[in-house]
Length: 165
Length: 217
Image: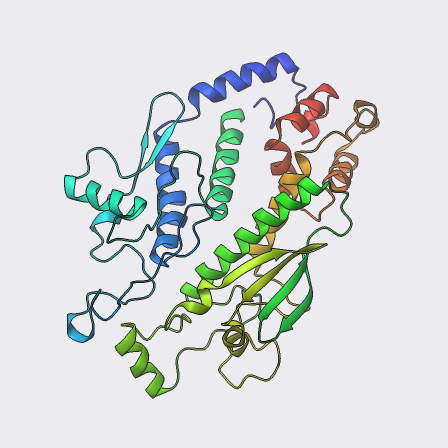
């Protein structure tokens, strides 16, 4: 209870606390909380509504020819709007949070996903000659959308408070 | 955050939001606040509309009523959701612009009249009201408004150059400390929100610690 109780803490004590936070910050509980509150709570709902969870990418580009894809009438698999990467649901079912080395988290399509899922993920995220880019995982130098980062900040603040209490 | 103006014309349907009044902010901070709040409000508006809900406090959201329109939506899009997405172009044009005291959020461009048709800022629309752009005197829903306050507080609290240890040493109790923090951050926040803002800022945390005030947080 270093900061929560009304005890005086010296700067030296704070540095010890920082070391403790760095060491213990990422554990199974944080990974689970991240998956529940960030991935399922905000990233996937944004994607489901056709909004990129990556800052600066806005809404996913519409289909070029909605009559032929995802089809019309009985041949239609899903609505043409919003474009939400949930045509079959398989790709998004692989969206996971896993603990990486040190105090990092990997968020996105994990290495053990099927080859097909990984190809689909890359094609949508980066775009190809025939598939418009619909960014759902940030690339180097990019960041998550503000709504995602606010939730991340709130989760990490709570985690820090828990570690300090 | 206060809606100070709303406009509906051929070129834009928008609401102007005051974010800076009463705050001593640098140009850099203003830009940062506008960028974060602007992006956040656009995202939250799209999320709400996608859920067939208004992002605005007290506003209801009508389901599709017209049989003909329902049939058209089902045929062309594949659902009968009242999510303002027949072609999707109106929501594609939802964005924000920086103003002198904050931002303007709205639909800028050819789809502005359609946005007014749904939000009825002009008061002339006969469509069922599905307002996603607020009018003067309205507020965003509680959680959205609270997060906007947090964004502003976080950016303001990053600038602690004005904090002097000598000022902090005059503080003797919790009330004085929270009053000081409220003045420092310059926005209306609850004690819990102020506490979170402090926890997020290592510089402020260090200064409070140096002044022996950590125990009061």
